[in-house]
Image (cartoon, rainbow, N blue to C red; front, side, top):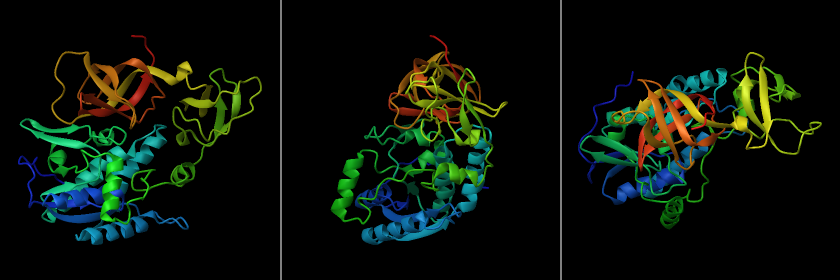
Length: 378
């Protein structure tokens, strides 16, 4: 079992040893360069976290390692490799599958950051004598008398605090985010100026460390297909789905519905799942009332620092997905692990299993996992 050290209280200083998580992408490459320029002793670590690369012609990790090696050579730093595939499977992927079996839509990047990038990697780096770890995340951490604060970065389009809300004080206190004051175009400009071989490499997408796959085919390797009816809320049959686990609330693409007699040409969206009848429920139009919620209940509540003070309802802001503009809300009930949230404006397609992340000004306070959502007029 990994046991993290106590939070580090002193600030980073030139000459300290920093282990950079070098992914093969441009962001971590420029992060390493900036640390070198600031006088740190920089080493790099490439993490392999997925062993199931058995699809013909698919070997993203091998290409990423080649890119990371080329970057390390260009920057003149050492590169180590480590395999965290067991930790990833046990701590992230099993949860991922469990949530899909429960017909929820998990956010594996959130757990991947907590368990792999800022737990397994951090523990490994400190064991090698590093003082700090650094990543190419777009986020900012400030060290204050009462603890660390996770804050928004300079680029609102790239800010990744949404994916980092599960980090705790020990993890944040050892973390450096060298890209906090840069925008993505500025990062690419720096990479071009340095002649980095991955300066134009496109951003990675898909499941954390697994990459871009045909999602339905990929998940079917682990969860059996259980076809059933697709219906409207009025129980008009529209077709057949491949398994409720393969769909998420608000989904528009890949539904296989069209040409319904008597229906308008408006697009169809997933509005609900009825596990008792193994039925997928669709509605037409992105503004359909069944896609709108003003309230939600969430569990697995986590605060980065102290629990926000003040009597309920407690006003703050929140986002329900990466890049969503911050939404005004009130936390109307809270316990050790659960909360209820009411938004000032209706929220579209709130999916159980996704994260609701809380903010006050530019500080990320923490968040929780959505359990259910409903509409209630304020």
